[in-house]
Image 1: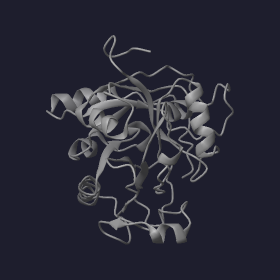
Image 2 (image 1 turned 90 degrees about the vertical axis):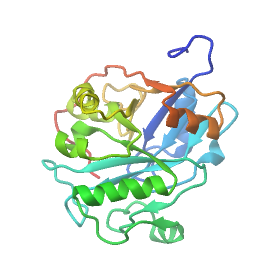
Image 3 (image 1 turned 45 degrees about the vertical axis):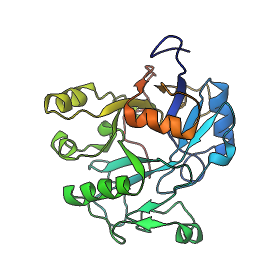
Image 4 (image 1 turned 90 degrees about the horizontal axis):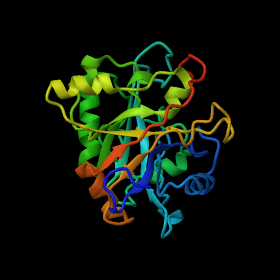
Length: 269
């Protein structure tokens, strides 16, 4: 499959995925089998506030990227407000065994067993999170300093104002399309936001991702797998090479146009 440059090595990737280690239905091993079977070569399982190193299930033809999804919302008790803003960030580790937790708050880190969370290296402010620009920017800065590439996830679903989004700096890429959010509400194409970023001199890369939880079976119109992907122009299928491609912008999003699901926010995090 060639999307970027004919004859060059390029690999199909899903950079946003959830397993049963948080609120997904499938095990990491089941996800690897499913995505390998659909022609993907790269998968990042980014469970909610649950940093795990899955590189042991990598193989010669399939690479696991280490990372997790962090989120900051106004509720100090991590309650979801279906009508209020919050921010979700994918932290993709530059080094395969980096599972550092940023800004650890046990009320948000609710999927990882406490005994597992205790063993994780931690960085940044510990304790209650704050949903304000200064705290969020400090969180992004700390994640980058701790060895992560930071991606901004599903702007439409997050309901942040464009002014807030445009105020942040340090995200290497923006999810321009998100299959899971598109299935839920029919709205997760973010080219207008990206255009405004460019007009303001902000030039993040953009990528397509699944955000799949697999609560619906494969083949169902509401299945959130295999609807979008990112093609990486990497020298080889190795961890250092893939990270270099991400950092250097050697990739392009390739979103499909799946049928939308029910018009509601719908993710009970």
